[in-house]
Length: 308
Image (tube, rainbow, N blue to C red):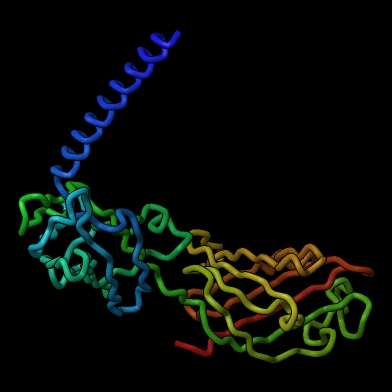
């Protein structure tokens, strides 16, 4: 029994020594392998509003690998655009420096400066066929060389940098607002009155005010809803791909869930009153309604921009 025990211990001991020996050789091989000059991130987007401005960003490059502790010399990396890029230097972006020096004192970390150019790069208006076919320009950036120590080589993998240039929202700003609010059971006239209807006698009179449209996307804005703008919001989107018979652009309309009624576009008593944006005058005409006790609450709301 003791002999069997000794034999088992001997086998385990040899196995352990062989294992250690193989691990040691593996460590030696890893420590002798190359270090890599790499990007800290390989896929990211840079945002810019197409207002003619230039937007400056930085991203990280570094050296990483198993034998970095043996590095002492500076490492100079060289960058170049991959030919598969859809972004053009000088048109969509600028790289002020294409060579970056990484030093031991800075743990072989460095920053690449890039400037996104927006002048002349405004995307098509949202909601058009041209917009549907549009893609943001993409810079595929390579580290083409790493010099200074033979153990450091370039990664061979390009960084995918999307230049996310968005169009300014042409509808954002302050509007003069003329509102007519027709209530079926309160004072004033109502469209259900037929020939007796007086459009200039709405409930509460013709309401004159101002509203601010805040951009959400290139064509969608957020603003206060009807006469309850202090507590409820709505969103209006102009669809440049929906050209109406009057030459205006169609509009979509969404009211916040905080509003308990189902709000619909149009005037149920006059099918000709369709909400639209007039591209010549830039006036936005809104006709909408919702049903409550006693009948439909109907709104005519005309927005005239105060900005150019």
